[in-house]
Image 1: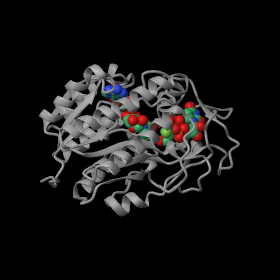
Image 2 (image 1 turned 180 degrees about the vertical axis):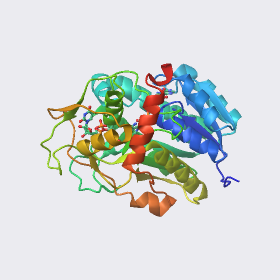
Image 3 (image 1 turned 90 degrees about the vertical axis):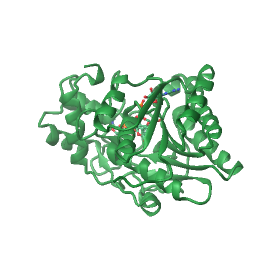
Amino acid sequence: MPSRAEIEKVVLTGGAGYIGSHVAVALLEAGRDVLIVDNFCNSHPEAVVRIGELAPGNLELLERDLADPAHKDDIVKAVCDFGAQGAVHLAGLKAVGESVAEPARYYRNNLGATLTLIEALNAAAAKTIVFSSSATVYGERNKNPVTEAGATGPTNPYGRTKLFIEDILKDVAAANSAWRAVNLRYFNPVGAHASGRIGEDPGDIPNNLFPFIAQVAVGRRDKLRVFGDDYPTRDGTGVRDYIHVSDLAHGHLSALDWLAARQKGGAIDVNLGTGVGYSVLEAVAAFKRASNRDIPYEIAPRRTGDIAEIYADAGLAKKLFGWRAEKTLDDMCADHWRWQRMNPDGYRG
Ligand code: NAD
Ligand code: UFG
């Protein structure tokens, strides 16, 4: 029997996306009822079909734009009719470069979506929210491992939307003690569900390391460009805290259960990472082992805005939620590769 918690009916915004689809499976497997709200602006309806296959349960879908004022009344009504008790909020645009080029679109989408959700949760008397923030909110000068007390200072509009939303949730919780919020600061989510049925499906040229490596391994791209080999790290390439997306998904469930059991209101920031950093070349070597394919690469100039090294102090999530990441870099590569191999063209295949 799944353990029963207070929050059994969960609104999941962005549930068709990469991380959201894994959160949906984790919630459904834990016996929760899930209402996905997504407009598929960066995802595919097929993901929702596959969520239902992987984890049969009470799953509903509302296809609406959370940031469109014309959709607000529908969303508020659906959240109330569903009987929501809380939300996991992942809907948002996430491409750093695009956010620099189109800041107003990013502010409208990411902040607007959050404000609509807050209104809907208020209307449903479901004042509990787990929000997908990011390690990108941290400034560049923190010592590793970075704790939640580290200085913030995002360097692009995308990162600023994350910090603003964290602050909005803190203000909302300060104004009304019935509100309980956790801002989860994700490090670098990678990998895919072990079935190979759901995973990351970047429509365009991938910005991030793992989807790029995976497309090189499967033959969709010639070679990886390694952005800089002259950083002050053990092999000169950038070091990040890669975390398996299924571990990350379970972190949301743990955060929700912790909020449910919490007597007092308030908003808190919590890192979700492994606490271990790997370099680009170490990631390439691990993917090569997992895929048994060659991963040609060339050293290219540093990418603007990149930092040398960042990894999490993952202690607070362990202390509060009893959660920690369990999967290794080899697991992340094996699962990412299985997804890529089984779905070389993503959900469109
Ligand atoms: P994703 O693009 O795969 O998923 C986001 C989902 O939100 C998509 O399904 C998209 O269609 C939906 N969406 C966006 N705007 C919407 C709107 N206005 N109304 C309804 N639906 C909307 O991204 P992901 O990698 O799964 O990321 C999920 C969240 O986690 C995002 O908020 C992202 O900023 C955050 N995050 C991601 C990473 C990462 O590396 N993937 C790291 C840190 C934080
Ligand atoms: N890298 C390459 N070649 C590539 C892509 C990446 O060498 O083609 C390197 C980067 O320079 C960096 C490392 O691989 O050293 C990881 O890069 P990613 O783009 O995968 O990840 P980032 O840490 O730069 O940023 C990601 C998301 C952000 C998010 C942050 C923390 O892009 O939105 O993780 O969660 F905020």
